[in-house]
Length: 394
Image 1: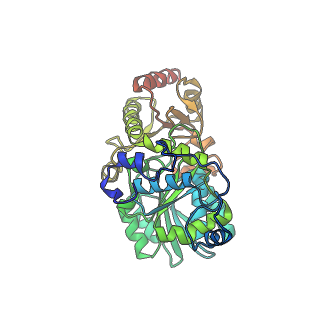
Image 2: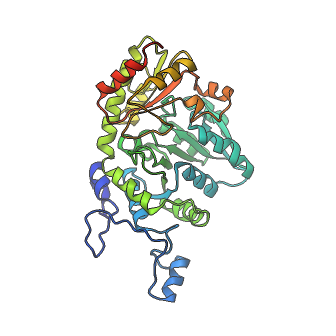
Image 3: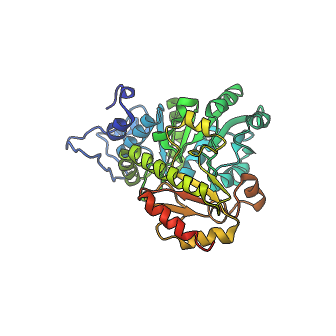
């Protein structure tokens, strides 16, 4: 499948896009575990290295397995092109370092992954790139934060861990008015539930480590966006900086994409059931999930997403109560990952957002009593029984 991919459904694209069979006529996508590729002549080698002739050169920036993953994810996101990277964080790093310069500014949602905050706040300023953080749901705040030097808007929707929803189309209008790129981290939804480019995003960022893989096996990332931008700026950066995805990890992610649609449906179904149970529990101060009628951006979620996703957060009285629940669970794994087929519980204040100051965590809404659930593919009744048991004696 290389032409007219837009006529195929998401499920078909997830299974068929990007794979050009070799002479061996394999049915499964081949895994090219090689660091380099041979040339027919010195002249061909010279042309490949200069870019005069297309073809494989070196697996740091050209590998057929990685290319297959890139083409498939681009098709699923309705994007022109994709560059795969070694992690979700390296995707953000590669994007910013290849498209922005000293003196440029970023306006970002303050409700993003903790490590992303540290990257924007502590690393990029060393290169003269400053970031202003705003409330992701306050459009007037985004407008006030814009300046002549603002070159990028960055948002993660739904947010981590409060599951707030950003108005992508409205942010695109703000970005376009200032000739800035709108970048959307689509980690929580994946293209199975949300396609930000369809709503106006210029760039989509992924931590493929999460739902795209779906089984917690590999680390990787991706940048999806305009072909010219990726070819002229991001790929040259990756070629020189080496923020590349390994062929093996790309192959794992290809297998994950094949079942992404049906997995995301199950993650969302389980999350909806568990969120409703938590919402009714008297020990829970507040439940954060776009699938609940009480969610402040519920209507926006319905307009941008086909389902509410697999992440639910909730608040207990404090850290002692939260840690009691974490330590009392049997089915939920205690880890800082998400998007796994196995359900996961995380205490953000001391893990994913632990390197952020208490004052900034408070401004983000990440309290000591907050817990984040990544609902897996287990039976929802078993998950609720496990939670009910853990809530005893809180």
